[in-house]
View 1 (cartoon, rainbow, N blue to C red):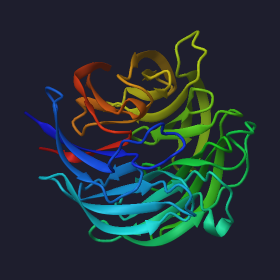
View 2 (view 1 turned 135 degrees about the horizontal axis):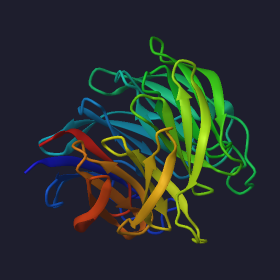
View 3 (view 1 turned 60 degrees about the vertical axis):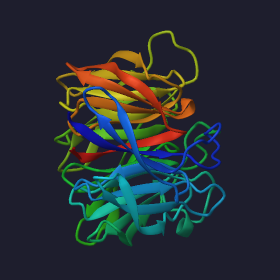
Length: 367
């Protein structure tokens, strides 16, 4: 039976948005893609609050960003992956040059990585970077910081948007631009990327609705559309993208919630389904996975929602074969698996315990 190696980052220290931290750090599991059974392999405990994790495209290394409550900056840890055992070996650690790192990603060449800092409190620009680019060494270690930039501004929500809050960073599929979703200023901030120097230069911005609070976003496979999950108004915004010019034009906005729902909700993770025809978004507190179709013009349209299997689904990921979606339900301390087929999700196997899970990443190779 095919199996997939899965890594889960969990909260193991005090954070304001985690009710009772029960995590251990970074855990690895071997997941049976037919039955949904998960075998716990190993734990990396010498890391604090690795609330986001990502595996490199070649599968050799993993990066984890740590939220260090009360410290002047967060931490980025690079690990070598031993696929047979699921164990991680520390390669390097660097500061994130800002507090509350929220997300990280790799460029498409594998030479660089970037992280963003949410920034719970204001810091001088020299110590409060919104986005930082790192050069990676031959084994996946962080070799050097090659660039950083600080976003400015605020939004209309005085409680949540009093300053910039960078929340997601991704390279465009052609690797020419780095795009940052900033919840605090209601914008996608676009930087031109110099792949030789690893440097950023401000290129432009794309505006979201006032008070939307863009959190995470994705591109389609050819980079002609982008989809933004907005945390503060529970919407999904679709953009048409001109890859050559790096411009983003909004074409639609759709609720992530069913009609009539009036409770608290904060969308979180967003993913394109493996065949590229649907989008899924995690609804925290409504505790559901919203499914969207993609219309011929590229606009995302809400189809339905299914229960996430637990409380506060913070992150999820498809396995490399596209057969299952694994969901991290942060406040119920469980990972729930869903079979994906014919455009739909259905529960698979039994949920399994993982304390305070906040991030999921799969190794790219099946076992």
